[in-house]
Length: 156
Image 1 (cartoon, rainbow, N blue to C red):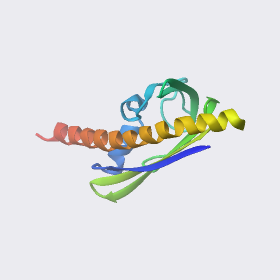
Image 2: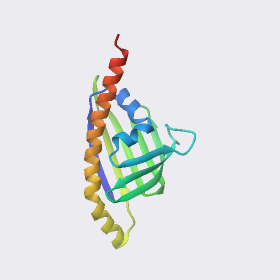
Image 3: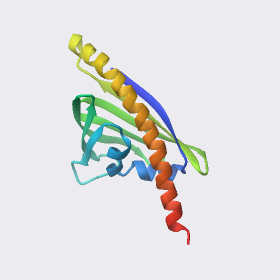
Image 4: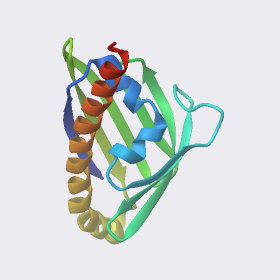
C-alpha cells in the first residue's frame, strides 16, 4: 500500500477553501497529474456523488471511479474508489484563524499483491511523492488566488 499525507496551508478562510475544493472542475487544476475528473451521476458534490478520474503517473495513466463517502461541510470529505485503482482520498479542513486554514490530504493507494504489486509500488512511489508535493503547492497557490479574486470582486 502506498500512502502519502501532506498539509496545504491556505491564505483563505475554511469556507473559501471548501468552496474551491468542493467544485470538481478544480481537481484537474490543483491535483498534479490529474487529466480528467468528471461526475458520473446527477450529483457533483455531497455524499453519494461519483466521479470517473484519470491520473498520469509517469508513463502510466491510472483510472478509477470514486464515490464521495463522507461529506461534512467545511470540515471533511472522503472519496473511495469503486472501480479501477483501489484508493481512498481524505481532505480535512482546519481553521488557523479568520483568514487562513490548512487542508490535510491523505491518499492511500492499494496496489495488487505479490511480486508484481511490490515492484509497481517501488516504481511509482517517487512519482506519487513528487505529485503530492506539487499538488500541495498548487492547492496553496490556487486557493490563495481564488480568495483574492473573491475579495476583489466584492470591493467597490
